[in-house]
Image 1 (cartoon, rainbow, N blue to C red):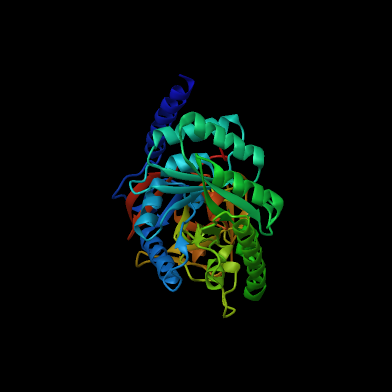
Image 2 (cartoon, rainbow, N blue to C red; image 1 turned 90 degrees about the vertical axis):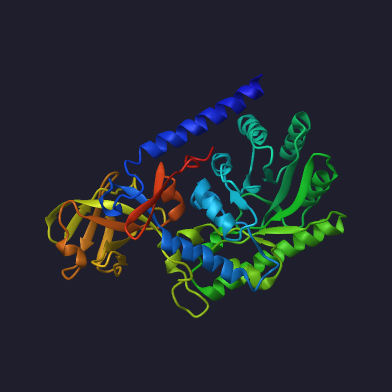
Length: 413
C-alpha cells in the first residue's frame, strides 16, 4: 500500500508542478519576446537547432561513439525529445528529479542516471518511478558493494530489471572505484551474475577537464582518462565479464575521446546552450572554442540608469549563476537579432540577489538604453542558471514559440 501511495503521489505532484510552472510564465505563444516579464530564461530556437545539428555532424566520422546527451543542462522533456530526434540513442540525467521530468518525452526509452542512488528515500523513489514508467530502460551508477546489494534486493522484491554501470575514478577524485582495482572486479562479477541486474559497462567521465583552457594540456589529460578506462575495461574482461560500453565524455572533451577510440558513448550537455566559460577554452588551432552557438539567455530589464556609466538590471544572483564568472551582455539590434557586446564594452557586476550592475564604456551601445528597455545576459554557467527557473521560453524571430516547465530543477533530489 505504501509503495502504491508513493507512485500516486509522484504522478499528482509532477502534474501539478508542470501546470503551476507554465501558469507562472506570464507569457504565451505568439508574444513579442522583448516585452515579456523579467527576469526570464530564453532559448533562441535557430541557434539551438544549429547546435543539435552540429553535434550530429561532428560525430559522423566516429561511428563507434554513440550520442547520449546529458539532460542536466536543461532538465526538460521538450529538449530531451529534440535531442532524441536529432540522433541521440539515449539520455543522461544526474538526479531522480531529472529522470522523472524527462520521462514525459514521447521517444524516451533509455536513460542513464549518472550518479549513485543511495539511501532509503531515494531508492524507494527510484522503484516507484520504474513502476510508473514500465517501458523505461534505466541504468544507474555504483561504486560500492553494499549499494549494489541494496539495488539487487529491491529489484528482486519488485521483480524489476535495472542496468548497472560501475563508476571508475579517472582523475576527478570524486566518486568512482580505483581503475582496474579489486572493488571494480568484485562489482562487475556481482552485477553480471545477478538475475535482476544488467551489467552494461563503465562510467569513465572526468568533468574537471571540460574547462581546461589549453588544447594540448587538455589532450594530455584526456589521454590519461582513456588509459585508465582501458585498464579498467581489460581488467573486467580478464575476470571473465563482458564490458561492452565505456561511457563518458563532455562538451569540452568529446572530440578528443572520439579520436582515441575507447569510449563508446559520449555525454555532452552544455552544447545545446553554451555559456561564457566554454568560450574561454581554446581549440586545436589556438582559437576560442566556438563549435556551438549561444542559445541560452537571461532576459533582463533596465531598472535604473541614474549614472551614464552604469545601468542596473533586475537580474541578480537569483537570476543568473555566477559560479563560473559573470555573464556576457547582448543587445537587441534594429533588424531583430541580438548582438553580443565585446567584453570590455559592458561588464556585469553582481549587485546582490535581485540586482545586476552593468558598467559601460563611453561608446557602448548600452549608453542609450532607457529605464524599461530589455537586454540579454549570456550565463557564465548554463546548468545552474537553468536550475534557478521554473520555466524557459523558446523563441524564433522575436516571437515566443514554446513555453516549457523546468520540472527537473531543484537542489538535487
